[in-house]
Amino acid sequence: MSQEKLDAYFQEWQDTEALAEEMIPLLGVLYRKYNVVPSLYGRSLINRSVLRIIKNHRYVKKIEGTELSLRDTFPMVKAMTELDLGPAHIDLGRLAVAFKHSGRDDVEAYLKEELADIVGAHGANGMGGEPKDVVLYGFGRIGRILARILIEKAGGGNLLRLRAIVVRGAGDDLEKRASLLRRDSVHGPFAGSISVDHENSALIANGNYIQVIHADSPSEIDYTAYGIDNAIVVDNTGKWRDEEGLSQHLQCKGVAKALLTAPGKGDVKNIVYGINHHDIGEDRIISAASCTTNAIVPVLKAMNDEYGIVHGHVETVHSYTNDQNLIDNYHKGDRRGRSAPLNMVLTETGAAKAVAKALPELTGKLTGNAIRVPTPNVSMAILNLNLGKSVDAQRVNAYLREMALHSPMQKQIDYIDSPEVVSSDFVGNRHAGIVDAKATIADGSNAVLYVWYDNEFGYSCQVVRLMQQMSNVHFKYLPLARD
Image (cartoon, rainbow, N blue to C red; front, side, top):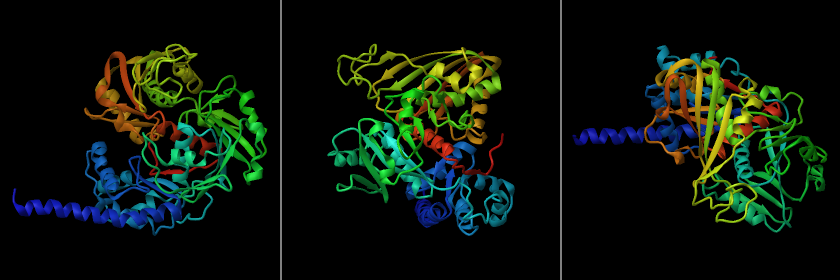
């Protein structure tokens, strides 16, 4: 290859980097001034590095088979900063690909048509009113990831404000709490700055003042004493799962609603955002179900809607959790006393039965089991389904790809078609579940689907979506998805 050709490749890369560098402040304007969250086929562009932005553009070719460069998207981003937009999630990738296919050349005119609902709507109250106070009751794996997501989203006027965390202890643990939020062995370092206010028992994360309350039960807490009112308390402890136990939170001054990040029992509604979140109604106590339930319900709904599920079995291959022992020791649960990092542990799961709470049409049609495996995060659900129609792998994959890209469940279902992906590739994925197309088996009336999921981060994103629903925080998603 000639030197001239080699130099051309390098110059192209430098030009791309320069465009990404120029795009970053414009993306910041959209996010912080207009509450617009731009993405490329679900891959966020907010607070991303130059290399990450370039990589997200390259991802589009895997989805659409069409190259998408920053030369395609940069004019759109620049034009959007001048349209006085109202709050929304905007998929820049879909807009840019559609614009390329349209044959048009006037970017501004195109955007005014596609974004007509929000053009000139800056300042309009499109997200549900005043900010909602959020309290995280429990600050373990899910609690800390929820904190990271809420802090990240606060920069764009998310209208969910993390005001406090509640932990057990004597109150001399602020530095350790801050350190656990700052450093994470699975999800990496915190994106920003964290400091400690020892005098007032608080953490300050990216300018968010977060009160740290030490208490052994909800009855000890008056949230109004900290200026917190009408709050959502997110219970991450799993200590109480029924209405009676969770009602303790509602008896605290300053609390309006309670959200459980574990499967609820009794009359507590188990909600999977994207599926049955409209059933919340006036309920003040709800459950976000489990990570596995969130991962499988959207895919099961899609398959049942298209093919009809006669019956099926769900096998969960799940990373070990804090409930298991590091080394062999007593545990009240069967098998869970055996060393989690050294063994595959066969255990039970309620996910199959829990599906019926979100999808009543599947009541009695599913069985389930689980295997805990020696990985710290990212799990897989294997769905072995007997269907009401004849299928083949190509048709099933094409349908699920369509659901992931263009259906109202696009935030819940992701899709990957690579022969090389492994579990660690899905750390930080914000979808409830990711269909592995290369693993799909389908023949006659039987289909076997493999669904990856980040059982920590993906689930936490679903929980935040539920918080938004409970707070009447409703973003427009543009361009509009096809039904």
